[in-house]
Length: 168
Image 1 (cartoon, helix red, strand yellow):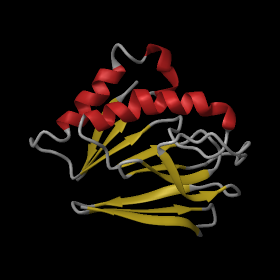
Image 2 (cartoon, one colour):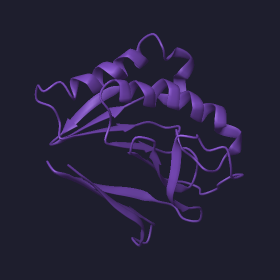
Image 3 (cartoon, one colour):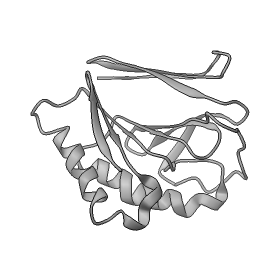
């Protein structure tokens, strides 16, 4: 249900955010240990990414504020305690948004399926939205080398919604 995948200079921690009721005993400690292992000086990746379903940051879907709080407490806190993460990738809330979590962690939410943002409000207080697109489906194209993550969010026709870089 959760695993680490190394691809060249990047390691991706894939986390099962939809099963929070079963989370604390096994997955939560695994998240911290995996982040620690990625920063321990022994064959560390250049970049650590984390991916899961439910967002920690979302400036829409007021009704999901309690889920965002739980994701922030149970996942993001463990990643930070383990040494940090360079980029968080999520979905679920049916629109594109790139936010920054306090401390500088980019958090990107894409919408491959139906785009249908809900009522605005109740974003997590540690989140600052940077770019929001409520109208278009989106995917994030990512290139990673030893010194840089380059990312571009695109619509189905290939036009850009957003672009950003993370540099070492």
